Amino acid sequence: MATKKTAPFTLTERLTLATGATPTVSGTIDLGSYVDVGDRQGIMIHSVDYIFQGATAGDDVIASMPAASSVLVQTLDLNRGGLVFANDRALISSSALTQGTANDLDRSSDLFPDNFGKGAMDGRTVVNDQLYLEAKCTGTTTADLNVTVRVTASIVKLSQVDFMAIAIQSTAADN
Image 1 (cartoon, rainbow, N blue to C red):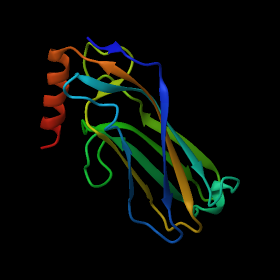
Image 2 (image 1 turned 30 degrees about the vertical axis):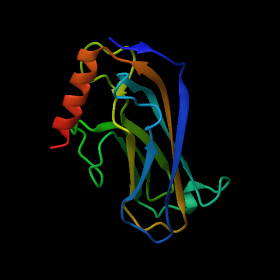
Image 3 (image 1 turned 45 degrees about the vertical axis):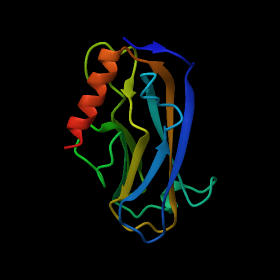
Image 4 (image 1 turned 90 degrees about the horizontal axis):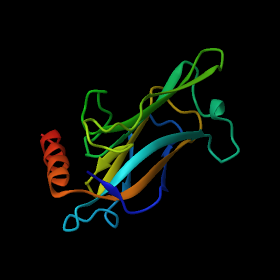
């Protein structure tokens, strides 16, 4: 069983889909100073929020996205090198922002942090030293498009059995 060592705190990272770009953009959030294998210390992710913005903080997102396109964003605890399917065990959270042909926007998140098993308190426990972020626009961006990922987490201490189970599961998911 995990015991919380800290109150929840927020980690953030911004991904920028450059003007005219369609490839996947990647980023990381470094967890190395929070995870300690010797102490069986990990990170419990309580929630992940995605904020979509235009080229500057005050710009409209619609100006950055082509009509009939979408932006897909995922947070993972293993580096898969791109977007993954929803059944991938490394997937922590994902979101999409879709713009229709009439400049109508629709935002959805299809997965929230889950414990993926019994025994977790209220979130997904991670023992890896990085979170990996992937974003892609299905059309060619007309201006820079920024996606800020805000992760609310806390540091937890795990029992030896729980730490080993999470580490083995993470290693097995890597294959």
